[in-house]
Amino acid sequence: MTGTVALAAQSQGFLSTSGVEIAFLLVGLVTFGAALVTVTTKQLVHAALWLVVALGGLAVEYLLLTAEFIAWVQVLIYVGSVVVLLLFGLMLTKAPIGRSPDADSGNRWPALGVAVAAAAALVWIVVDAFRTTWIDLDGAPQGTTKVSGEILFRHWVLPFEALSVLLLAALVGAVVLSRRKADAETAGSKAGGKR
Amino acid sequence: MHLVYPAVLAALLFCTGLYGVLARRNAILVLMSVELMLNAVNLNLVAFDVWLRDTLHAGQALTLFTIAIAAAEIGIGLAIVLLVYRNRGTADVDRLRDLREDAPGADTPAGDRERTAEAAA
Image (cartoon, rainbow over all chains, first blue to last red; front, side, top):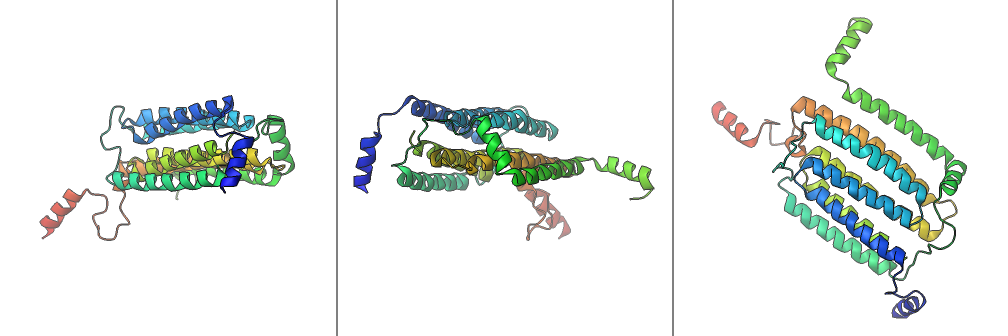
């Protein structure tokens, strides 16, 4: 084990960080900090806005990993639509604008214990497993739009189409769920006189 | 780039989301934490895809599918939360205890339930 580690250290160098690594580390710190604020802040709207920072930071991480298409999909779908949906949800449930003291439930400290234990275990295992592994980011980018389009429509067409059916089902389901009952009743009475 | 950086960041983000799911009271904040966990998984998928140089790019394809499923999930989840809010007047997950065994009073707060029990006695 120590032999492989020493060999890997010779070939790559543990401390000779490249510019990409430093950028990844800094953006990762921002992302993690924003995620922490998202789950701890007492102001509900601020939580949604910090979520934008966390998701945008993840998009930058995808760019640094040369997965361009995923990065822009992340920006479009998460930052563009999911956060807007969440803000709409906060507005429609009349979330308080200022600080709400009961944002965290009573099992906050057990939750913190579980999360810290899970983080310690996961980080330990991951570091132990991949400490001699390097990603080769040189050469052709792995996730340009051309590459993504080719693999998506050449090898993954069937799952892609199934996913479109799932999205349609989710859309119809959301519409059905969020219709007001009074509207449904009037629509039903108009249609057939009885429900 | 060292593979440990994205892997550790993904693990930390996942555990942040885990804490949020367990500790938050508002259902919409719980949904935000679920999004964080899904994003951690996406980061792992992309990092391992780039590391393995998979010719099928299964990691990136799965990431796209996960993003789409997360969008569907957030739509349905918000619809359900809105429905609960409309019926109950609250979106707090720990006040929805209709299925609790020892609480016939269901959604009334604990104090009210004791008072009604005293009044009945």
